[in-house]
Amino acid sequence: MSVERIGSKMHLNKGQEAEYRRRHDEIWPELSRLLTETGISNYSIFLDPESLTLFAYLELRDGHTMDDLPKHPVMRRWWAYMQDIMAANPDGSPVSEPLTPVFHLD
Image: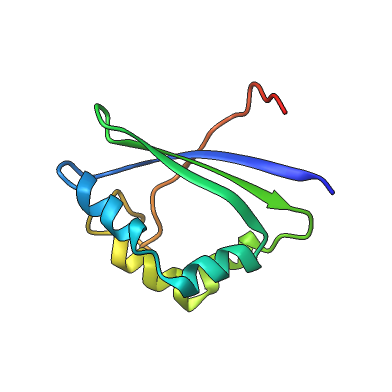
C-alpha cells in the first residue's frame, strides 16, 4: 500500500493561538471519524508563533476520498466554526497553500 504525503500552510489570525489550540484539543468526534474514513492518517498541524503560519502534514492511503470533504456537512460546519480565527476563503474553507515535498526519510 502506498502513502501520499501532503504538506500545506495556513494562516492564523493574530491573538488566536490559544483559541486555535483549544478548538483542536476539543475536536469533534464526528470530524475525527470523517477524516479517518476518507483515508487521512498521521495528521499533524504545527504553528510558527512568529509568523502565525500553520503547517499541516497528513498522509493519504490508496483509494482516499479526501476530495469529497468539502461536500460533507460536518466539514462545512468545522470550517464555519474556524473561519473567525484564521484566514478563510469565501466558501469558509481555510486558505491553504500546498507545499512542495523536497525530502523524506523513512
